[in-house]
Amino acid sequence: MAKKEKITYVDDGRTIADMSDVAGAGGLPKRNPYTPRPKFKEVWKTYWSAVRMMLVPMAVVVGALVIIYLIMLLAFWLM
Image (cartoon, rainbow, N blue to C red; front, top):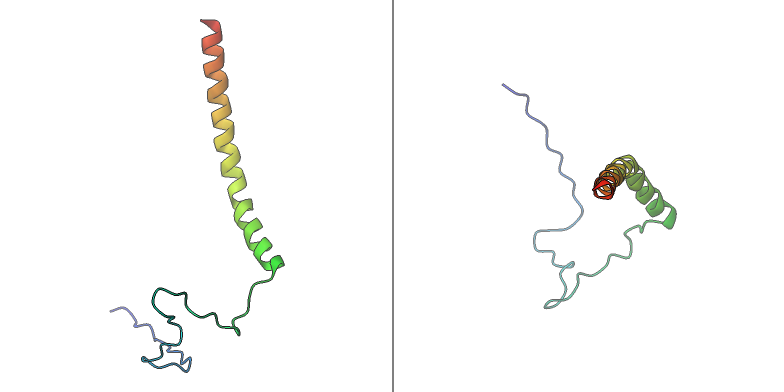
């Protein structure tokens, strides 16, 4: 039988009836002023790490499209 994972509960001080995050009819929820906002450097670092992972696959796809284009161009030019 698999070992059961122990569940850890975190008490954030709210109750089930806490409706402080709910705004009026159709409004946006209130922003918590104590939530740390990410700095530009952190956002840029995250963005660049995501883009860096996509560079090689993107280059492969663009290269394949260029090769297909050149083959088609050569095929129609020789006709």
